Length: 502
Image (cartoon, rainbow, N blue to C red; front, top):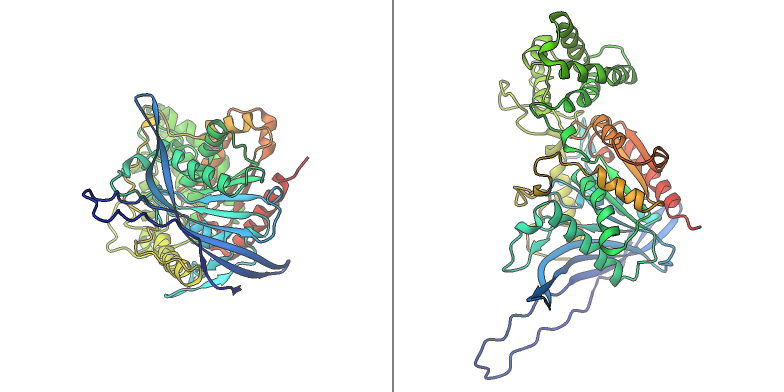
């Protein structure tokens, strides 16, 4: 990759106070702080000449006092990085807005792991790259077919609430949707991209955000999208977290438990497809057994215990003592306990030692330990050394400051955004959806997402506009090179198809 000299965007100068003024001059408001660089990426399809812009933009909120408009008040400074292809027709050139999840994750993972023109060199399970890691070109970047805008929600990345403003309003479902939606509106308007095909891509809670944003952008701004891409999305939280009376999580997690047991050699010579297929076929029986509760006969209960234990790789005694309910962070601590290992949660292929082996729940996620360092180091170097943006604030890769996250909108009911995605698809008959799933994703399992999609209240024919792909890796399936190559090809094909005109 070749780069040209960095050039900073012009910024308005602060107004100096008048000489001899008796009152202090009003402190100037923050302004957009953006740096632009020019690059060329060599790909098998030819060279891509593109412009990269990174920094922070000022987010304002309209204020009304006594039923009178009182201007736009600065509320936050949001860090973004965007890439535009040089000399492209913006009425034909798609643009994709990208974010990760958490809540509390910056956009660095999709940015430097899958979509952007540069990739972090992490290695994969069993062959991790040692510090200080590295960056390599990404000839499969989605930039080949779409401009890219990466957004760090408030309190992640370099994004912060404005001086004197509270960050709490941004740390919740609605505040998050509104602020990210406003960033998308501003960027689209300032860059004259209302006539461009437009896409969203979000991972994990970013999938929660993406599904809700598709509906919000249409309803609030009349911004109709061409496509929404959801990577390991959390659509219905009831399918993901154990609760006392729910019969959803345990059966929906059984296939990923079976796949994990297979990966770690607990299913002998059986194939992965065979093991997972049996687990998938058993989910309805498992759910019915949980629903019957104490009405199960001793023989029926013994059969469920034996089957769940065999598929999950756990001891029958453990399944029995757990009362047939296998909370996932306990499973990942238990499965390889005899080997003195815990498995990953977001990618159960990964393993690591524990400080002791009597813990009920996994003490940490070995997958996160393997990936947080490479992504943090790569981003810190990349924005400063290659994109020319220097900022002394901590780049919050995974921010704890956003917690507790507010779900007040869902009080008394499940946190579920599938209905908002349904509304977006019904309102916009051209909206297409791509969903990427990881077979070894132990946080947002394949079957939990499929269940959520199956419950969407849309006509059966609308399912033809929802494309799902399962990759042989975990939550961040692009860590696995073969999965990344396949996913890059799938995303490229999706954007080209959903961008079609006429």
